[in-house]
Amino acid sequence: MTTRMKWAACLASLLLACSDPGFEAFPQLDVAIEAQPGATSWTFQPDLSGGQLSQQVTVRLRNAGAGTLTLHEVDFETDNAFLQQVWPGGAPSLPTTVEPGAARSLHVRYTPDPNLPDNHGARLRIRSDDPDRPEVELQFDIATLGPKLQLDQQQLTFLNPSAAAPPTACASFGNVGGAPLVFESATLATATPYYQIVQAPAAGTVLPALGEPGNEATDPARLQVCVRVTPVGTSGDYDAKLVLRTNDALAPKKTLALHVTWTPPSHYQVACPDTGGGLGFNFEGVQAGVSERCCTIDNDGPAGLVVQKIELRALAASKQPLADALFTAEPYVDGTGGAMQTVALPRSISAGKSLSICVRYAAPADGKTANAEAIVRFQQAMQPGALQLPVVAGDCSTPELVVAPSSVAVWMGAPVGGSTTRQVLLANQSCAQLQVLQACVSHLATPGACAKLDALSPHFALAPEIGLQTVAAWGTLEIGLQWQPKSAAAGDLDHYLHVVHCGGSWDGETCSEPPSTLVLKVQGHVGEDLMLPSLSLGLAAGTPTQVGSPLVIAAEAADGQWPVGEHGAYLWYVASRPAGSMLWLSGEFQTTTAPKLTLEPDVPGTYVVTGAVQAIDPSNPAAFAWSPHVSLSFEVEP
Image 1 (cartoon, helix red, strand yellow):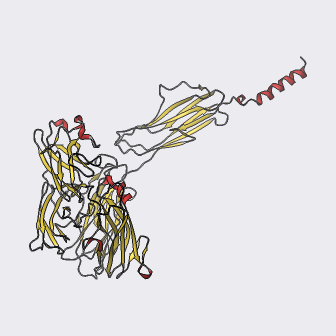
Image 2 (cartoon, one colour; image 1 turned 30 degrees about the vertical axis):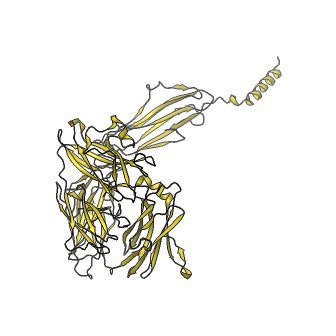
Image 3 (cartoon, one colour; image 1 turned 90 degrees about the horizontal axis):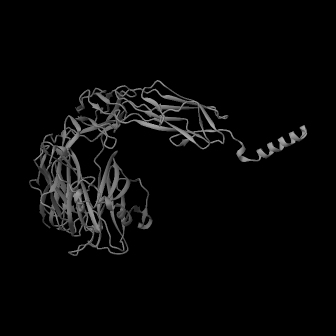
């Protein structure tokens, strides 16, 4: 073969090879961090576990080319003893090859030591024979977050205080940082004879890092500093500052403004013509079509009132989707010619003006209804407020079982071999008779637990046992809950009280709807029982018991292990009322700081009001205990 023929054959073979897509046999290094192709850095989160947990990411080195890839060097450079490179199965001898489509993986692991913090990062360098990227560099850092003070308020405002009853306001704060926050002091930066710090944590009080025991992310710990103002007239200079000092390096000093606002008394009235004198939206007996009921807010002044939003909330949280389908709310004003005109919120109501709140009810074809409450949130004289009105619907075939006065967990303690009993009050908040089918205590929170014998609690019992039992319309049911720890191994337990009831009408044998279940957490502690505060209720001396007259319920509280104190709170609930009554205390706005409750009964008959009082540990305001529920029954005359 001649030289010319050899060159021709060679050229032909080259041209043929260039037309073949698989001819480019070059290696290509593809790097991914935690399955993120192209990522060149990774930041480990601050250690919030006290060194209990390590963090790890995977670096994948893949040959995405057609030729064999050679890894020459993989260097991990760091001064941090808690960062390390880990090869699963052992580190390979370098250089090493990676065939097309194959991959090698390594881990970068962060194992912190809470006693020896080190925030230095690391650098990973990979050198290969990839002609386009012969060297790839990855950076690994540790996000640092020391103690960080988070204030829940920026200002404490006292509205129209009086010297006869000087008010107290509290600023609460927590630690959202990754290291313990140490409280140092609380002082008044402005010399003033009006303010006094009446409660503050002790110097040196520590809040753990967020996520650590005692400051869980789901239940952040809080400390309080409380200030009392004693006014002398309305002309003084009441502007002052409260200064909090902590070991927060970024903001060692936090300042809150103290302010007194003097405004003339402002009044508003609510009228709901469709309830016959009561307050609320009554759709009882409506079985078809769309109906509307309205209430009017009249601002008597002199200050303005801003309605910010309206919420419709089901009494039972599980029925919120049903309530959303049944009810809608709209605000209206009087338009041209007296016609009602829809307006947007927020809406300001000037003195002498009014705003109508109308709720529409679309009666369901299947008869499934849910009672609710309309919550009208407003602001007046720079202070937030809320008006809550009942929304009662249906043909009295769907009962509503709720815990009264509040669905807070029941806490019980007893030594091994001993027992403690608490009473839980349940209220049927509807005009329908309610049938309880079964009750039990289980270590499972999911409905259906009562049917599983192995899921029943060996340490909790009902005293007496609850079987088929009827709760009258607007009636109550008291359940005795007993804690009997069998052994010290029981420890502190969170179990659940299940009350299975008919979610519809009961014909004596069967329920028209699948059973519903109310679930309440119960907490048991092996050890001496906490001595809870106690409460007694009675009608205040001289209070009238007639329809339309203000009726005062007075409470007398006694301290338990902790004092009720001036910051204790009272829970109130109207658990039972006569048919046709719209007397209401919202599940959200039932808490007050006053040991009395003023009601205005709207129909004659028997009412039952329940109450509870809270005691607070003076050395740790985050620790508190509620008294058992107490009931008061009284008759109201026409």
